[in-house]
Length: 288
Image (cartoon, rainbow, N blue to C red; front, side):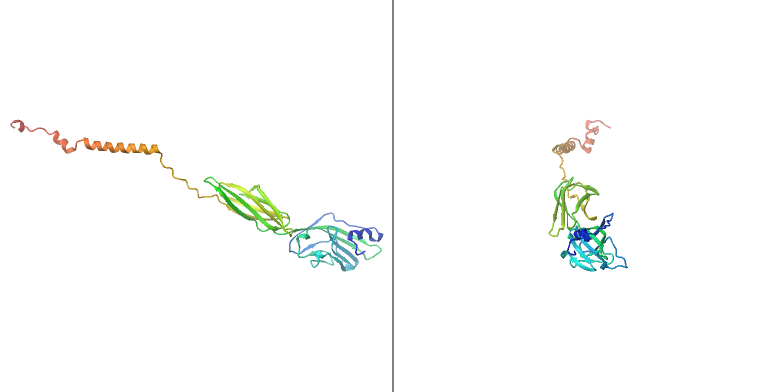
């Protein structure tokens, strides 16, 4: 009887009717890789009783027996959980340490009262879900400029994060406004850990703040980077047009010519005085 799977064994119970108490709400436990986590059972043994009067099964996905106790002793322990699990003899909590990625999933605690072998019955059968997560690395943002002008800067922005679990979502924002990635890549390692990368083409007309976030199992990791518009724009000096140069030259030449002619033909002040001087009367023989 003890060698049977719990579901088979409970179904027989030596031909006696089986009484099962099902929980109305699902229990959820979250943990991270490397931590110690406790999965609560649906029954606690009274202080007046001992584990010897109970048969307890902890199984995963209703098929794999993780840990089993009968007559107060362990009768089964799955090799993948060996040296990583223990059960509290009073509240029947299953402790797992250290937690691994493959521990993620649903677990079932089944408790049967066997003090009277002729009339055993199931006290409870409840499922608890373990959500395992592994922290992603802090997102790394890079920006590569492809073209620049006085008005804008064209660049490709990439954001990547790795080493996490479960499957993540990646998002981006420019000055807190959501953007849509042009491309995203998702890959997994041999340990079922994820890596994710997003790529975005941008045409930056001013300095903006870019934020990249990776979300997984209720956790978020974010990084921000200031994207600078290229400020090396030099406006060339525009030379004066040919018509402006020609007109200016004509004006200057005309002005200089006018000064030259004025200096040549206008009498000087001294000569002008002698020219209009009254003739001497002596020269005409007139006595004074």
